[in-house]
Image (cartoon, rainbow over the protein chains, first blue to last red):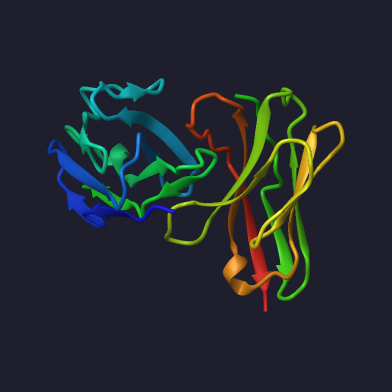
Length: 114
Length: 111
């Protein structure tokens, strides 16, 4: 299994500002994923982050709004840029396990934009 | 990705078996059936997966219909800790590791 931590666990931000969320894994992993979970909703994949290459974004998500870094095999960041109240969500990172059929999720970052 | 359909919610009683259904009538021959669950205020966790044969692990059993158009996650003895949103997800064999979550099904366990 993989143990994933995220920082911050929660934050309240002003509209127009940016927040960078960190995701740390206790082992080296090839693929990391970033999801968004809006209040009362299911999870939506934002992007897939591979080390050494540009992140791959899903439809409806763009790099200018959600820039992602993946400097090594145990760490990634997601920035939520120029925030609006609609960005209020839980942001989760996940990694594919060694067995690939299993993904491990972080505890999430609860973001409130006022 | 092929679509899955689950009831919005179900209730069960503690220490009784509970069967969680999932329909996936457009499943392809190379789609794996995965189940994840999300406990309150936590990230999702893997429960079980299968392709054609029924599967058992320490958490649950997965019964897959012969035509693979439906499957059932079986919790043999529900506990209060099993109260969660359960997601039935199809993943292409050998395809991307990404997961496409549907709406899921909320399981309530009554003491």
